[in-house]
View: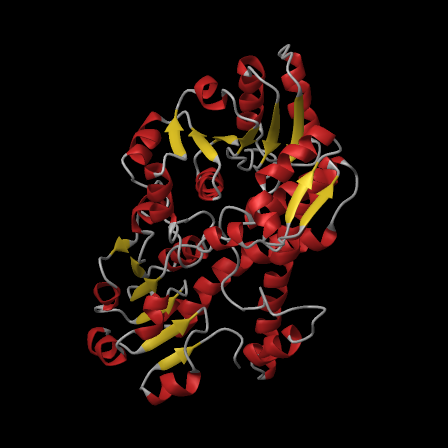
Length: 436
């Protein structure tokens, strides 16, 4: 089957490469000529483990190609995926659907055969109806089924998530759409991956509801961590005890500096705006968004407290280890490190930063942070170091070297990757999250 993937960003490129690996013929389409040129040269626009090799092998096999010409890319395609960005709209926080709508219009104008148009982008409830209306408005005289197929990919583990999904959600009431989507995902169906067919609006809401629930779990355990510090409990013990309940589960119950990334911040906000529009407010998610926003700067204050408070912190240096919102990605969107660095800078603290993959993306977002080539360069002369992102590289720091380079052996572990007893025995003043 020929598949067209409109949009070659994170979702489009990963999905396109994986579909090609299933044996489909896939064309990834993007208006950014420089991005397409780089992809043709084998240069990835994002960092995702295993993606470069996956793209390379499928391009070599002739199953994956790239173009800026939408008409050429969708010609003969039975499934056309829309995988463009839906950022938060300035002013009101709604998802910006201008890119989605523009693609729908161009597809309607240039489609030359019957096809299924699939919204892969994360979109508010009712977007499929609008995409269908726009295509009809163009006068397209071919059979078109508009389907919702939300993605559930975790950055840093996206290829595995795509090939071994918990579920595949397909929103359509159209027999033609259902038949084509079954063929698209037939390789996964043969591996017994569950396919859930629902209405289009239900599929659109499932994505937002899932992300809001996961954001709620993260925020919940972060507030429990604060309580643990007050009462002298250990949040990791509490998390294990809670997560062993099969009704709850252990995932997303790890205390830290708050959630960030491309999904949770914008999707929780978009869900709130949709709920307001339909006069059905979601108070729990409102609280989650507010608590998460305040937590990031609170983690900056936690580092300042480790330096002895506001007065003592001024003029001191802190090494931030880990700048991306999570490990195994170069994504800096809404990363806690941004707010933490700002809080430190506002307190007159000099900040040096290091990240294994996110330096290029971080630099323009953190202009006052000294970007370093190694973690030890950042640590040199520091009065404290703070672990913000739990990259594996930071789990095996040479602690003797750290103490020799740093001005003071103060470690603020915002991801709880070290054991307190071990760190104190190694001679560090150790501060963690939720381990009173």
